[in-house]
Each structure stands twice: as C-alpha cells, then as structure tokens.
Amino acid sequence: MKRLKKLIEKFFYILCSKEYKDLYKIIDNYEYVSFDIFDTLIKRNIKNPADIFTIIEKKYNIRNFKNIRIDAENKARERSDFEDITLDDIYSEINIKNKDEIKKSEIEIEKDFCVLNKPMYEVYKYCLKNNKKIYLTSDMYLNIDIIEDLLNKSGYKNYDKLYLSSNEKLRKGTGNLFKKLLNDNNIQKKQILHIGDSIGGDFLKPKKVGIKSILIKRNINNSKFYSKNNKTLEYNILSSFINNNTYDMMDTFEHFGYEVLGPILYGFTSWIHKKAKEEKLDKLYFLARDAKIIMDVYKERFKEDIPIYYIKISRKSIVKASLYELKDWDDLIFKAKSLIFTDVSYVQDLLNALKLNKDIPLKNKRISELDNSEKEEIFNLIKEDIETNSKIQNNYLKQYLKQNDFNGNIGIIDIGWNGTIQYYLEKYADKNTKLFGYYYGINRAKKFKEYVNISRNGYLFDFNELSDFQSLIRLSAGIFEIMFLEPTPSTIGYQKIGKNIEPIYGEKENHKVDSIKIMQDSAKKFIYNVKNSDIEKYIYLFSKETFFENYKNFTENPSFEYIKMFENLDYSNVGSSNLIEHRSLLFYIIHPKQFYIDLRSSNCHIMFLKSVFKIKLPYYKMLKKIYEMWC
Image 1: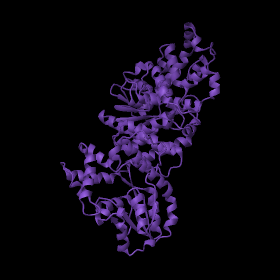
Image 2: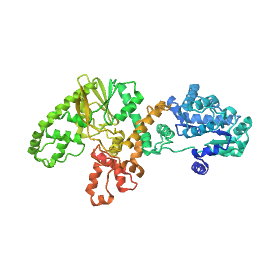
Image 3: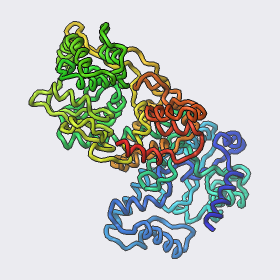
Image 4: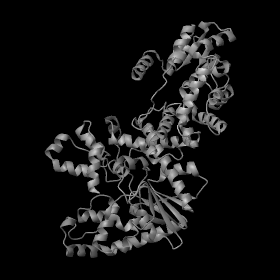
C-alpha cells in the first residue's frame, strides 16, 4: 500500500508540479503571493524531519526516543480540541528526565538543520522587487517566535504576515488557514497565488477553497555522485547538505569536487588536526605537490593553531640528494625506480633516471640480462659522477630545510603511500627533531620493510592490515591521485640564488589544468560552506566511511559518462599517458598477454576493465580478489 501511495505521489508531481523558472511569469498575474515554508522557502539538511529525533536520541542516549516523540505527537493530536497543536502539547505527552532541556535542544537542532532554499529565495526576492504582498502560510507545531527567528536567520524578511497553524489553531490541510488569510486581509480568491510542495495542503486544498495554487517538487536530486546504498544518519546529513548546495552547478568536474573531493578533504584535515593536538606538534609541513590542496583546506579551517609550511620536496629531489650513500648495484636500482616511477628495463633507462649523459658500454642491454661482473663494471663507471652531483644536492637540501625552520616535533603531510620522503627526511633531522607522518594510507607492501620504524599513520588504512580502503584506492589510484595534483612542475633538485636555496623544477606537464582547478576550487567551496553553516556542529566527527562514501560509490560503479569525463585527463605522474588508457577488446582477444600487461600497469583498473568490455559487471569485486593475491 505504501509503495502504491509513493507511486501515485510520484506520478502526481510529474504531472502537476512546476519548475522554479516557470513561477515568475505566473506570479506576474497576481497581487498577493502565499508561500509554504518547510520544503518550499526552507530546506532541511536531512532527509526525514523525524531524523531530528534520532539525533536527540544519540545526543542524550535516550533509548527509542524517536518512537517516543512520534507517539507523543500522535497522542497530542488525538486529544486536542483544535485543528493543530504546539510543541508544548507534544512534550506534555512525554515522560522523561530533563524534558525541558530536550525540548529546547529539539528547537536548536531544528534551527541548525534548516537552510534557505536558494532557487525559491530568488522567487521570493522577485516578489518583493515587483511589490507583491507576501504571506507565509504553514502547518507547523513550532511556536511563531521560533519560526520568525528561523525565517529571519534564513534571509526571509519584509513579508506582510505569517499564518502558522500552531498559532492560529487552523490548518492548511483543512483549508481553514487559507480562509482566515483571505478574510483577515479582505483578499478576493482570484487575487492570490499559493506556492508549496504538499499535494494536499499546498495544491488540492487551496484549489478547493478557490485559490490558484502551484505545486513544486519536494525532493529534487541535484547531486551526481549520491550513494543510494548508504542509509546511515551521518551520510543522510552529509548528502542532504550537498544536495541543498549544488542546485546551480552545471559542470561535472564542479560536482565531483564538491561531492567527492570536498568530503574527503574535510575528513582528512579533521583527522590531521586531531593527531596534531594529540602529539603536541610544533609545526606542520605539507609536501609539494599533492599536499597543496590539503594545506589550503587545513589553513581555511584551522589557520590559527599550528605554524604551517609548504616545502618543495619531491621523491626525485630527496632521492637524488641521498645517492652519495649508495651501497651497491641493487641499492642503485631500487632508488632509480623512485626517480622515474616506471620500470628501469635497460641500462640507458638507468642513465636517464640519473640524468647522466655518459657513454658507457652495455647501455643498450637489458638490466635483467646483466651478470654480476657487468653490474659491478657499470656501477664503478658511474658511481663517482653520481656521488659528486648528489653531495651538492645534499648540501643544498640541508640548507633548504634550515631555511624552513625544520626542527622540533614535526608533522609531515602527504597523500601516501609508503612514506618514502619521510624516510629520507629522517636522515636530515637532528636529535631534537621528531617526525610524525600523516597520510591517507600506508601500503601493506613487503618491499618497504625498512620504513617500518618511522612514525607514520594512515587515515584510511595502515601498513599492518589489508583494508577495503586500500583495495579500492589501489584499483583506482589514478583517479584518487589526480584529485590532489597541483598543476605545476615537480621539484627535481635545488640551486643557490643569492643567499637562498630555491627549487629547480622539471618540465611543464600536460595536465588538463582547467578541469583539475575546477575540481579543487569546488572542493574548497564545500569546505567554506560547511565552515560557515551550523551543520559543522554535526559533521565534524563523522566517520571516514561517511566522508569517503561518494568516492566509493563513484569508483566501484563508474558510469560510462564519468569514465569518458576522466579518461582523457593526462596522468604524467606515471609516465606520460591518459588516465584511463586501453585498446580495443578485439585487440586483447588476439593479444591476451598484452591485456594482462595493460591491466597491471593501468592507473585505474576498474575503469580500464569497464572501458574494454563495455558491459555492467562486478569489476571491483573481481579485481579486489586479484589485488589481495598480489599483496
């Protein structure tokens, strides 16, 4: 029966409701305009108004308060001699401790979760500008002074009169509140227009009274990355807030930044701040380039707390500065891979990684084919040049860190995944300096055993466990990393200019700068909107699962529209390639070995498979099992 009712309502809204943009011309024909309040002029940052009671239940640890509160309202209505009731009537039916405090808390929470409905606010301003007489007409149990305060806070001023069912003891649902409005103000029925979201109280009843009425849609989905599977109260609040603030967004990258990257940054910076306080850190160092957007958000939220530094240190620059310590050939190969991020297959690849323009024997030979004597020969030929260059860079890096006051209890912030830069920075720290690393995640990788002793923490996952977060990010690494990319060249070394040490930058990379900027600016807009709203009281300590839900929903089940959106982004963090690069299914059928190679080297495995096969399959679940075997 409930399902049938919902279907009828849905059909009714489709058939009878108007778009906001259609209201202006209709309003021109009327001298008086009446507006409903809740879900018309004002929206809530929550899916169901009764969830306010669940928040109280959690806040005061009152078992089953939601049902107690709903039952009390039903009893108050049954016993009332009037058409409507007040909040005091409802709480007279509740028998719990601290009842007055809880009632006061309900009012405050209701206020916190109410925000103006931005497109309807424009309609409201249009009425004022065109000298329409405005009446606000609502069925609501809250007292009139509370509603007036809420309207004023939301920016609704200069209306002629507020007609509230709790104050007038008459309801829109009976039609009597409309009749009183007409009689009190000597308004003829044909002179007034009523706008609201309720099929009964705002559309059918005023029509029955003889008033022209317009129905607007109650639930408008503005979000593009909303997860239907998450029904938790936390996600309910977050997704409602997002939906109420994305009504005017057109660009998909703008949506992605606000709905996906924004919450991820909010959760991570909250965690960093908490950790910094716990460890009593003196300073925070955000590492170029990926931590730039993280630093910007942290400064916006916690600017006065701890001194903040943005230092231009990359894996390339710090590894170069440590090459003078080379132990042997194997150590050289391991560090060379950190310099170019791709497979060092030939001797010439090694020379390129080291920036050595040196003509040596065997340079065109595969490294895997070298015997021990050949390795030793090559190592001895290039070792002196490597050491000379490295010692210069090492000295410059020491001075660069000194310039940036690198001492005390220090927090190192980056996105992850192993803590390589922190590992090398430990060598530059004096005995009074202690480093704490804070990352989105720390890989559970056996080849980085030497990093185990550094103090590092992962927000989403740590190296001592294999979590769903690690699997998901590893299988969509390109998407995750490109969100944080500062579209400027990477630091490849240091030079002395005057008295200062300055970074040397690599070649400019061909990123789609505009798309990344749109994404990151929109994420900052999310942070700003949260910070400047009452909702921050409730989402500050949300779980990481809640903040990560939209990314999870997007990457586990990517649509072809969003694959198309991302596939042409350049991902030169791992060589020069498109983010989702693949060949045709026919090619892979003929060359199955190449399919395996391309899958392993892909920057986004999930989207790679869907781009190749072009059908709906549980790609993430299949890949997750494979990934767990790789680890």
